[in-house]
Length: 533
Image (cartoon, rainbow, N blue to C red; front, side, top):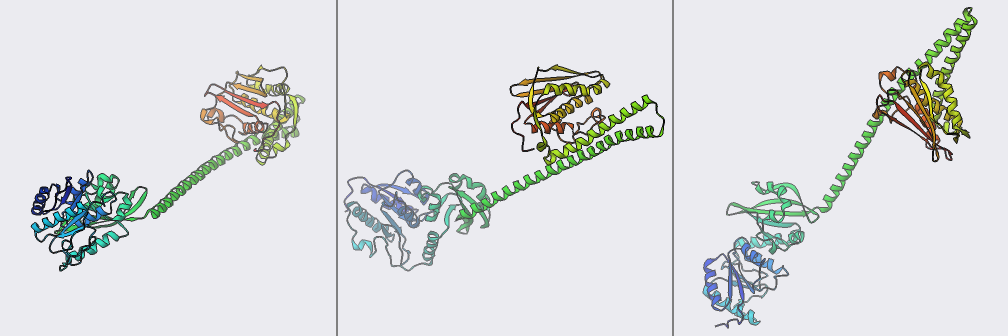
């Protein structure tokens, strides 16, 4: 009898042959071996996740995962490849059969098999070589058993070769969607050894695949359409096919083809296409905005031409009428003087319209900034001059021009005529839109390095939404009370551009129906003319 091991060694016996398991277990336990039984490949793999034996006995006909395949998984796993493995073959094993097992035994005679197994274990424990008769003329790492090879074993060998050598990763699941096998390429893809995955639910391990694979795995036949799955930053084109055993569908094979480079390129193209689409949409929005702005400007231009035609026709008609009267009739001296005064007034009005048109042209073509004539002067004097100039127009509406604040002297370096034009345009605008019998409050002061002029009226005010538009050329604030007023709508546009050329700015504050206040801020000493206007 073989010597019993001094230390109680553990043997895991994985076999679906209950009778064989009973005989071997009894013999092994009598020799002081601790034996654990596993009925299929999944339960054996589950056991390895928690512990490991001193020896592994695998039945070739093991359920779910056959013993030869399980042995291959053990031997390619660095954690378990040192465990001695004994593979049990049936009597109809092929003539030429090879395996990675440390020993292969045939199950011809169960009692004789138990004796040979004990002898083998004793030799493994003691470190001795096996007797020649025990190996049955077999190589220790590639045992050959001379028997007639059934076709089923030949087909299995071919299938296993294709399975393992395939360039694609191959993963097999059973009908419960548990992982039961995979080739080494699939282990590389997942960065996990197969023995850590056997028995695990596919979707529990890889939940991100569930939505993509669910339809394929419930289909009644193989699904040819391409599925793209992602794992660890790489992309795989995946195809599924079902496994048939005993004329029933028993699970699926999943083939994974690495298409990361193609997928990243497609994503790059898609991203580029999305960027182009956004850019096209942005450009279209710009075009629509520009078209809308052009339509608005065309409308304003049409309104301007209509206004200016009216504004020019009225003084021309007046001048023509009074001139014909003076030429064709005897007119009293007092009437003649009055008529000539009207002609002079209307001529000045016509001259103002023409000058405004010329100013717009100079601003647009950049000529105005080249014609600025800077000189040092007291802006107080200019304010006094403008008040006297516009007072008659204010008195016609019983409006008082009140200078509420003014310093003794406030000298600035600027173009005198253009600054005078700014004051005229702003104060004249206040008179035009102020109700009869109200006051226009004028203030002039110095704030640090700026001369600050403000003009406040009691007119209809400017809606908040239109404050940014009132300095555009041709723009006139909507409202019937404003539309009835005479004007070309370019006075504030010209004033704003003159002030900007002096590195200043015009501010406006207004509450609807509560009057309007314009504030002009000018540097006391302009050193640089704005070049962007």
